[in-house]
Length: 150
Image (cartoon, rainbow, N blue to C red):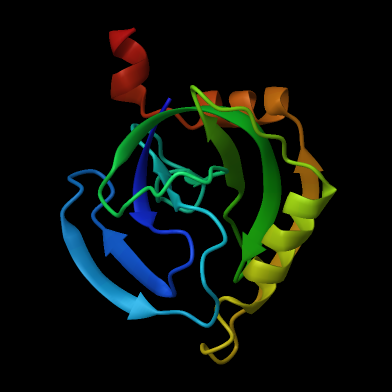
C-alpha cells in the first residue's frame, strides 16, 4: 500500500491536504508532537469520509509530502467526536516493526492529548487489532474505482 505523509515525527505542525488531489489546504499547531510520521493511505475512503489514517513506525525521517510503500502491521480503534477514525499502523517495506504494548501506549497518550487545545473535543481509544484485521479494514475502505481497476 502507499501512504502519503502529512505530518512529520517530532513535529507539532498538523498539515492538511485534499486527500484526493494531495493539494495543501493549511497547517495548524496541535498540543502534542507526532510520535511517528502520520498521514493516510492513498486510494481509500474511511468511515469519516477521509482517507484511512496511517502511522508509519520508522526511525527514518519521512517528510511532509512523501509517498511511501509500506505494509500494515496492525490497527488501533479510535472514535473521534463520535465518528469512527481508526488508525492503521505500518512499517516501510525494508523495515520490520511491531505494534506492541509500548507503541500502543505511546499512541494512546498522543491521541488523548493531541487536541487538548480544542474545547469539547472527545477521543476514545478502543482495542488494538492484528495485521489481518488491518488488512481487512483497508480492503473494505478501498475506493471503488481503484478496486474495479484490479
